[in-house]
Length: 99
Image (cartoon, rainbow, N blue to C red; front, side, top):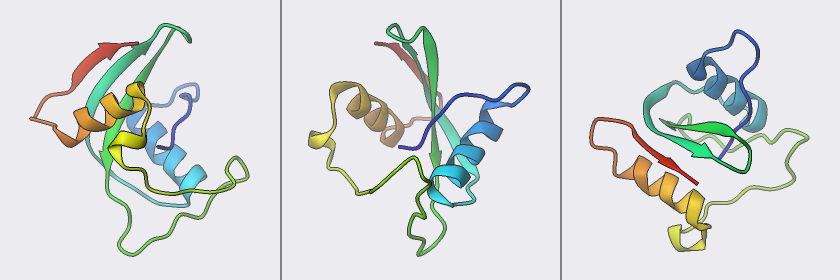
């Protein structure tokens, strides 16, 4: 999952679009915010959005990354799995959690 910190003056919607552009080379429009999660180790919030990849697009990775692949849910760690499952099970309202 692409991600990163907000730039000064940036909205969370602008941030997700920028991070996907920078890390994947994709122009995306967020469909919905599925969750907001507090990470105690970093004293920060993570916002998870559902976005659609451009049709037929392969990621064009930034210098920050050397490879990509899809993961089965059971291959993810507990935190990532919870966030992905919350997104996939979106019922019309964002959920929240803490880790």
